[in-house]
Length: 73
Image (cartoon, rainbow, N blue to C red; front, side, top):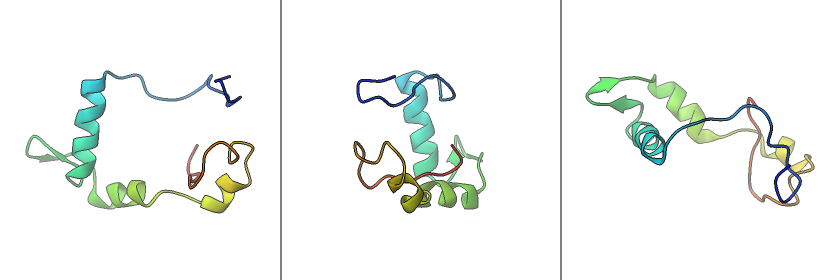
């Protein structure tokens, strides 16, 4: 558990700060990187939209994190 009691034992991403910056830049560019379309722009739009705020608000973590959403784990 992290300091506020959130489970932190499964899933996630393992990457360097440089890799995360590249990923963020690809998202900012609508799924394009190095002149290639790597992600469908519709996928990027769904990622940016976020998820269900009501579902997250009903979770035990809502008291620690405001204005978040839940989608696909």
